[in-house]
Length: 85
Image 1: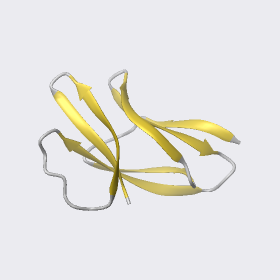
Image 2 (image 1 turned 90 degrees about the vertical axis):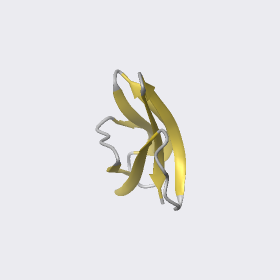
Image 3 (image 1 turned 90 degrees about the horizontal axis):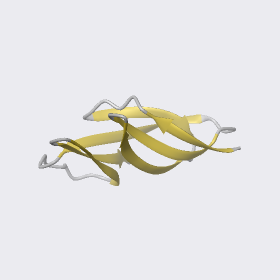
């Protein structure tokens, strides 16, 4: 069954989320002072670990295979969220 998933317990700079296999990540945004990742999922399949990185604005981003998910702005803090592959 298709469903929407969100994860709010994001702790920079790196974090891991267990989510259904093949989840389609939609975005990362700020919701009520929490960084949240939303994804379309099939909740009838098993789980896999997905790896994410958070970089502050101006921080060097090391070379590597990653997908940009979004930029979070909260006051003076600007964070860039990526999924690492």
